[in-house]
Image (cartoon, rainbow, N blue to C red; front, top):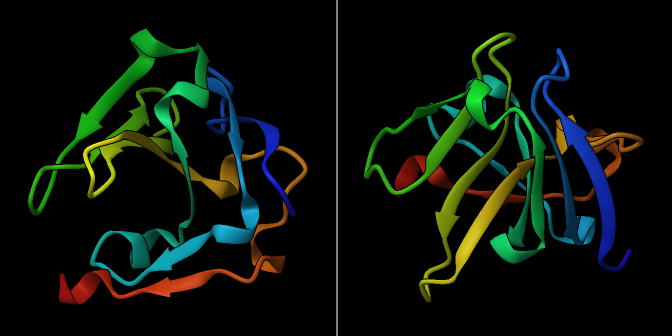
Length: 118
């Protein structure tokens, strides 16, 4: 796969977005939070992410080093994305691939990230 454009949303549809990302570079994480969620992540520069609706319906959760701004829908509780920065300081978005339309995240060859040791 190459970089493609995807549409995503939370469960109730209040929060929706479009993003350009490469699903050949997805990751799973074993940190205390991601493991419980079974989350599959894709990453994109913030400039190729468009929040279409629901900005006023988001709530934020910070934990551990408080560098990732986890965004949750206030209505259904789904985290469809999070704001952060790359190690080089580039503004990024971590996309919950489970929230992308037409994508089966379990069929992707995701890289395992050891977030529990970080």
